[in-house]
Length: 199
Image (cartoon, rainbow, N blue to C red):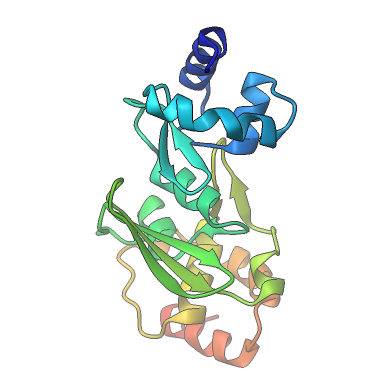
């Protein structure tokens, strides 16, 4: 049987949190359960009584609280960070993006659609040494996103002949610094020169 005091505490803490979704580990911390296993036994009752909602395996939300799609993607797939067309749109380097789409740097390439949330996650494979390199990543309150220059370089690393609407906001000196972390240096330099002829 679920404890109503725990549920009141859970609901209040989640609403006051910057997070919009919660893993079992995070819920255990909010409720001070001590272990994930002790909380897992209670979660089905919490869901049944509509205090929380199971939105993906091991991921929960509170009904009525809007879910941040970047936070959701980042937590469901880890290690990862927001990049490519999602980050480019975030920084207004491209002007159009499908609201349901999230592009994520990850350890494999795959598309996953979460119908309940109407979120389409595009996983893009980056080599481990690149994926786990945290230089020029920005750590927000609830998710991690590439800097604008790193998002640009991630994109041309995987795609050729991409059109960028507002490339002038990129800092070429930052690009010169970041380029060293990428494999296939000759290819990358050739692709950069398509957009920055004086590179």
